[in-house]
Image 1 (cartoon, one colour):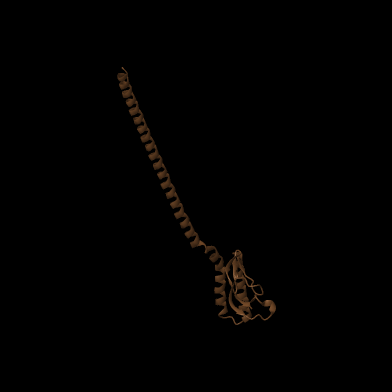
Image 2: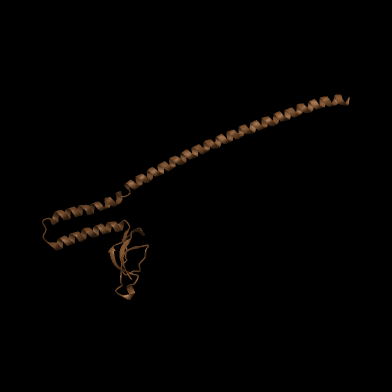
Length: 178
């Protein structure tokens, strides 16, 4: 009797084991499907995010190019009156014999031009008599200092340097005393 009892139990156990294996396999398949859906969802999000970033980069590059193309418009617009004054001065100077009037006209135009550039943030750099600074000056010559106090200092400005909004726009070309 014990052998007979074991056979049905064994068949029941095998049936339960098969059911459990089938359930585990179904669970694994469901988990695999969920994982695939999650991967597909993340792939889709990644592709969309990449496309958005690429569009943003392209748009900002186009904006930068447009800004660069029109950056000088304001400065050039403000300098047009100076150009007009030069044209008037040239036309007037053809028949004018008075040298003092010519000088005064050019000084007026120069001051107008300088005023416009200073209004835009241009500031001349003072270099003469100051210690040589390689961050501001470009030494084009070294000469013996006429006085002991001028050693290592700027003796002459060959080409003036300029700041634009407190940043060096052009280095001053200077002669340094040794």
